Image (cartoon, rainbow, N blue to C red; front, side):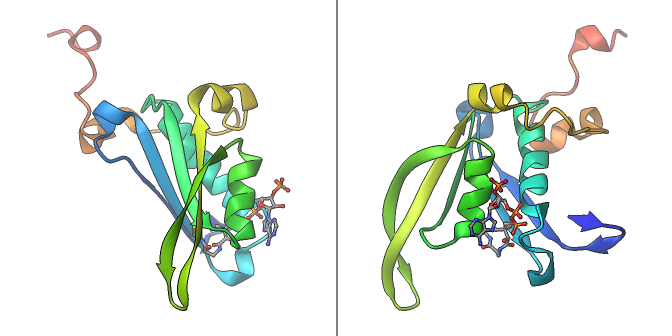
Length: 140
Ligand SMILES: CC(C)(COP(=O)(O)OP(=O)(O)OC[C@H]1O[C@@H](n2cnc3c(N)ncnc32)[C@H](O)[C@@H]1OP(=O)(O)O)[C@@H](O)C(=O)NCCC(=O)NCCS
């Protein structure tokens, strides 16, 4: 993530066994001075547009500690719904991790990705474990 040429953070997207599960997970980090200014929502929307767009994901999941209001705020703002809680080890013992899930239909209905532009995707298809553009599109 960068703004005006300054690197502000990183937005990750991953999908274990993606061709079968069509589900992506994400994690985000912004430098302290960049938080609370809408960048978190922007960068999550960017990778969700990639996931639900050319990657044809069916769902996105995410998890955050119950008291990480900024992370949960990004998820709620983008239409994720509650998907359970679990106990995880933390420095001072066990604490509650909140899980959230965004369904493809909810993402599309929200229009949150309508303003995101994706370029250069086709050349990257093999890097995502996808077959190259279909034979029909590349006649010999
Ligand atoms: C989590 C993180 C990426 C969120 O990005 P951000 O730029 O701070 O969040 P945004 O400004 O985009 O806010 C998105 C939404 O969350 C809400 N929100 C943000 N910070 C909040 C806070 N401290 N308390 C309550 N709501 C908050 C905003 O109001 C907004 O909702 P809205 O659009 O409905 O108004 C960022 O805060 C960060 O890097 N934190 C440290 C690392 C981290 O915790 N990563 C996630 C690990 S699971």
